[in-house]
Image (tube, rainbow, N blue to C red):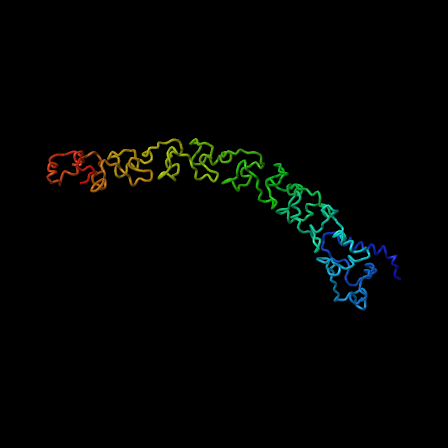
Length: 422
């Protein structure tokens, strides 16, 4: 025997309450219908929707054989007939999820989402569910932008992390009070880092000094007290901090590069300063540049290794005159020694090369005098001689008859031939 309506009231009320509250808002899962469109059971789901305002023609909605089965071609324009369009998951929701004997549906619509869905966040996140949720499902969206309004904007690897990883009370609906310090969430990782040992060095907080939200690898410590540039860039921390701890260490070059200081050329024997930056740069040890302004290393002297001139292995003071290094060149052809050439090589030569020497001749070597040196100086002899030395013969005209009988000096010749030409 079917129970009376009064007997069913508590059961009906409980069923409606479960439909509206328990089945809809317990989790953030996709909204799925808990009641079927077809096969409605009054005993299981409660009474039918009141039909007082429905058309008298039942066949518009129902099949003739059964009242609990709707026609296959049944269609209802919810937006047109009620002014409330069904979108997203509401399209597939059973009618009785909203239309039941729990109360007038207009009252629930007027309250928005909270009319049907319990606020599991207890209004900690505000009353507008659409800020995070949509009508498609309960999965939240737009949280990155919303999180930017908090003390901890989401960036890098934090964007893809599940909310519950930081908001440990999220399963209860509470998202307040989550920590913002790195070590609060990454304490286990901090304890496992062996190289360098963060705990031994006291690096247990302010992780953002070295790390970025994109990942733990590629830490970048602000080393502006000693810029890590040139040859120092890309080195492992332990290359300088050899003790395994990262307390202050000396910043002078020789503190790390004493072995380089003693290599050839031997800086110790040469009493070179340990202020390595005087000659070297931070890019590399090769290509050192010493201030050689006392003897400019230009022309043929540029690019030479130090030991080309400093042959004794030390780089102390050495003579700067040419023959100290170029005596073999001086003794070469033409024979500078037999000709009595000065050892002040710069009188004829330049620092570019030995070839192409220029000599300040006492009269211009032009015309027929533009000849090789040994034409007038056979054997390399550059001793003083007069014009008559070369011009005692072949002069037969009247103006020079006496030339054959007298040995005029060059001064007499140059009176008529000031440039040595005819």
